[in-house]
Length: 146
Image (cartoon, rainbow, N blue to C red; front, side, top):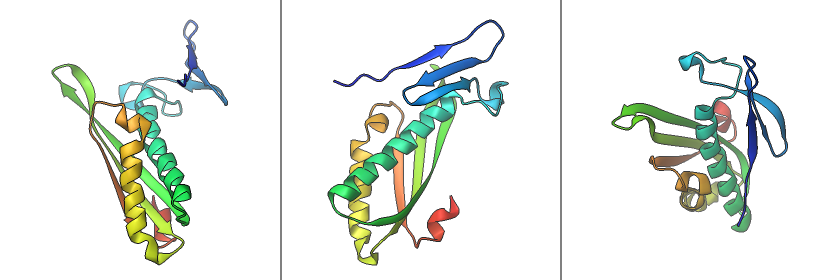
């Protein structure tokens, strides 16, 4: 069993702060769309970022395990929030990655690794909304477009 912790604090009218393992205290608040400071982290973006980064880390885990060389990886994630009968909810998260292989003959292996990353990502597998993950194999310059 693994346990992950963080601490959230707020005093009077001061901004709320979050502290996590390895990260110093950082300001958190609502998204700018809900009146928050656009410079502060917000739970909605952290939710989408945690899915995006988890999938990327699992992708790289399998590239090492299957000995596939990747020159670059860039991904963009978008989480959709909609009003439902249970209130505002994330109704989907879409992650689109651009991957540049070290060997052009590895396209099928990269597609296999993408399926494994989607299947074994702990964070995306733990949420109730659907998560779609797509990988486009591109040359190294195109991978930087995200």
